Image (cartoon, rainbow, N blue to C red; front, side, top):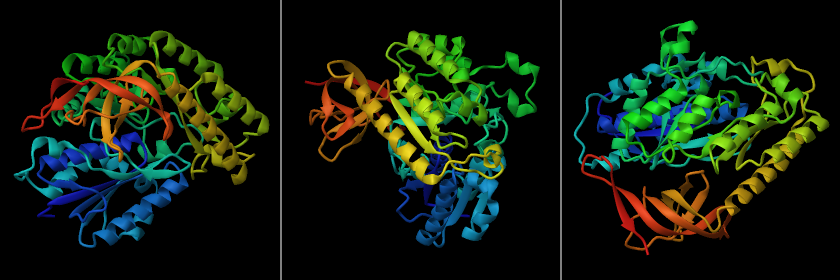
Length: 478
């Protein structure tokens, strides 16, 4: 395909999908292609699909059909997990689309590069080219919405695949076994993100705790992986070899939070964020066993305790699936009580969705949809209360906030180091976009109980030279 001037990206699903599409957007911009919002016409449209639930499959197909209707002459490239497990459905949805499944996904960037050709001169400045304008849908099993435009943080994929085969999960079939990117590849991607002006990187993977420094790319995992680079070692290299200001992990299995990782995380402060997302899935031991999880509730609680001892003020977020087969009323009540006992700062809630080929689909005792909906609603209320209580603890304290987007009322909002949402109204003379501000938290936001409101005391912002390299500068507020 020649003369590609504009491209749009539609992303459905997880942070790994988002990291993959951010890499695609960076490549397209480097080739002089303007990445436009999904609603704008484009010469090239990339759709990254999700299959975590049946609803995700349906929305993935809808996204492809919508892209074709909006761009009848465009090259449509469809990739991701839903293509991997249900390729025929996408052939029907758009016979002209180029389908790239997950087994071929390592070649996606090369395919895009071939489609757009050699780099073309662009009159847009480096920072503008660096700002992603991804359009997408974030699937959470309960509802969906437009994915946030990430102008301040970069999602960096370090690992793919999973061999754990939890009984409800189709991802091993869709993504394949664990394999890791080499540290050199990760370092290169992080440096590219920093040159683009990003202040924070989020390391992502399907099962990120299995990171092995790239050994698994060379064949079967074996004894030699014991000496390979671990996730903790990778974080250490990023801290030593780059100027990254803030590092987060997107999600990590609780059993992978070992002493080495905690040591690197505490030694790396304040550049390592006091925030961890630890999937739980259920607080009932019987359900956890039938899910094929590799811990029980007491193990999970012990990990949370170790993390809190090591990282003062850490925010613990989690995931829970409601309505898994055999989750009777007593198991549900035990799970709910355990979840309350953890005192989460945030919680994602999913309704169980039967996926073809998984072990759980053959289990007896499936929970009816009305019951799943009631339990999900109850747990969403618990989650909302947890976020609000966590936010309220910040009133009267100071925190560092990466400002991400402006609100309609003139305030700016961003995340504190522990991922709490903070809004503040800057001095008119202070450009706060992509700035890291020291904020005195004064109250709860009347418009959002899980968001706090503060006053900017000082602001360190990224000053963008012509080629987009970020140089910190400090501007003091009133």
